[in-house]
Structures are given as C-alpha cells and as structure tokens.
Amino acid sequence: MEILLNTKRLILKSVTIENAAEIFNYRSLAEVYKYQGFRPDKKEDVIEFINEKVIDEINISETWIQLCIFIKESNKLIGDISIHFVDDKQVEIGYTLAPLFQGKGYAIEAVEEVINYLFKILNKHRIIASVDPENIRSINLLEKIGMRKEAHMMKSSRFNGKWADDIIFEMLEEEYNNERGN
Image (cartoon, rainbow, N blue to C red; front, side, top):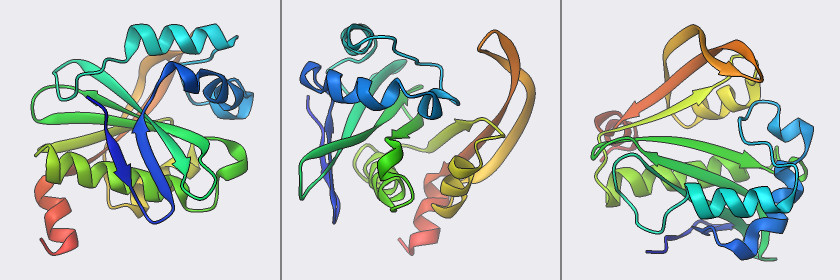
C-alpha cells in the first residue's frame, strides 16, 4: 500500500527502488550520516536497504516504512522519513534531509504531516523519536513541533563501535490534540 501525503510545499510518498540513486547522493555524505546508523557506501546498499528493511504493507507491528520527501514545484527528492511500527499503537520516527535543503522548514513541514497522519489516520497513541544529544538541529526540530524530552539514556546504544547516549522524545495523541485544539 502506497502512502501519499501532501503539504503546502511537499509531497511525501513511499520509497521505491527508482529513488535509490538520489537517496544515496545525500545519505552517503559524512555530514548526513554523522548521527545515523545507515551509511551506504554505494547505491546498491540503498537498494538492499529498500528491498530488505522496508515493506509495502503499513501499520504492521515491528516493521518499517520509508517515505521520500519531494518538493512539489520541482519533484526533487530532498530527504526521507522512516516510520517504525513498534506495536499496534506506538511508532518511532526518524528523518533525513539533504544538506542543501536544511534550514528552510522542509523537515518540520514533513515531520508534522507524518505526525498528523499517524495520529489522525492510523490512530496511534504514542510517537517517539531517538536522537543523539549532539544533534542540536534535530533536538530543536523535535521541540519546535511539540515533542517533549522523555529520557536521556547514558551509553545505551552502540554507534560506530562505541557506546553512545540517546535522547528520547515523545508525543502522546492527547498532547497532540490538546496542542492543536482538537
């Protein structure tokens, strides 16, 4: 099942193999993968990721889907958003934006639309995001969209061969509704 979401400036839709080269172009940059576990060395790594890690069905516990972020005006792929269906009521999100398109409000616009979709269409109870404490831009984005810091876990995950801290942000459906007057 394909997901297709629209915002004022963006289209978000399910990833396809045809997107692999464009995804590789930004995901392979050191400044992009600095805070991420997925570091493709070649386009084939992205193809393998799409084939093995991303499924077509949505809303199935313990699965992932990946959405590509396109600028409406040019149809340029500028980033992606992952959604991990933890269980039937909870999801984890992550996002990546090509450096050239950062700082223009695209990530906020895309993530807010995905959060709206998850709460309003899929009726999720809780959305979480995990972020490296040094990734200040991502922390600022999560705070700006209304997520709150839930935990700072010390040396809780292996990243690049070392133990790393992890900050967990979350938003409950009731918080989302209260913040937006729903």
